Length: 549
Image (tube, rainbow, N blue to C red; front, top):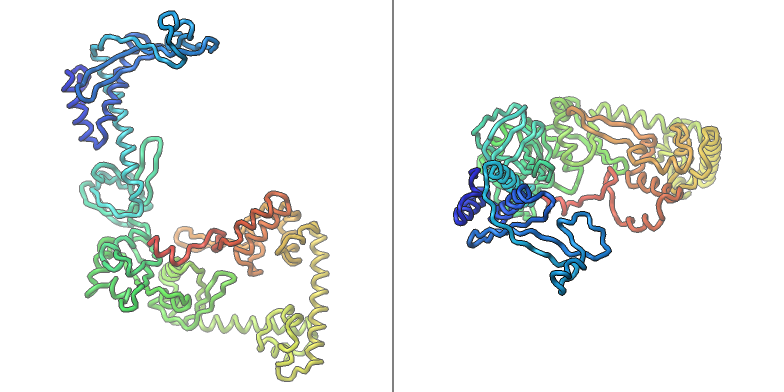
């Protein structure tokens, strides 16, 4: 816009406003409002900055109207600026019908713009236009999060790629680019709209080529069945630029989801691989049988056995010795991606390691029964072989469960239960003494879900009052796992070995908060039906997962 635009004749002014609005893809009224504001500011410079001066531009004729405005206020109102306010009694001297809130207007002569006024006006107008552009960009792109968009690389700054999207700019931050991907200005590029935010400097459009859903959307473009919803992409795990696993499910039993995604002679999957700079993709058929799904997810490694521990949210996978390195993958890549894909923590063991561990567990349980029940090795091993793992099970199972074991009559079973209960009472007394010595208050034991062994461990970790327990979070109790530099790192929780689920740990802490008076018990009742995941967050069902994909 030229600096002398404001001084142009009326029709030229409207033509300029229309041209700017068309060029910037914004409403013409926004440009006209910006011109009116510029005229008002210039008028205040000429007639007085303390005045309330209002400009109006006719959108049809370009006619400019400039008025000074004074507002009528109550007689007893405090008048901060006499130039813009006047009491009702004074207004009545000129107009007996005047009322509070009415405006007294005085028409001013149109302005003739000099160089300084024109330059100032240009800055105001261009500022308004930039604000309008940013608002338009946000409105246009905020509902497009989750889509793939095409653009042209404008420039690369410190590894960040600035992309020209036509009427807006997006940025692919360095951590959202593909490793070793070489792009330069002028290249065409596709990216996933990850986020759109309104920030002080304007709306920011954040793009990604490393996001898991970028791959999912690429498959939706290449595979009609995915686009139509016949095949759902349940989950995606990526090591960007290197390898990925994608779980697919078909709602039509006559359609093979893996075959459809691979395409004739691999044409469909190859198109995605080419876009991702050669990233290898394993396409896994999804099944609700988690054991089978894990076996498929760890391909090409062969799996001997899968043991699911729902209480700990972990899966133990047993593989032949020669398959161990293949199952784990280079730098743990294969097992890490399978874990991300399934949402379960995976422990990989060889058959020899699994056998050794089982033998160790068998020996430890046998020794527990030998010591606690004062029986010989044969009786202890017989109990372990029948599936008894803890002294509580021996002491409090139905008597029939013991008499059904070969060689155990009713008298023997009763004696075993008596000894088991005496042992448990002795251990409980020792633990209670340890709790008291550690300074853990009696009220802690009144918290629903807290046991004596827990209380002892609380004392060892300086958790001594109900308020101390109330101040914990589930990760303090059950630990947590995170990935740093591609490596899976686990931080142990203080009672992780006790096998509480995160939902149970969360409930324990919430009960402590109720007992401490931090929250009302009714607050827990409102959340009783909310299922939580391993991190204490609401569970996303497979159905929801399909919909989001």
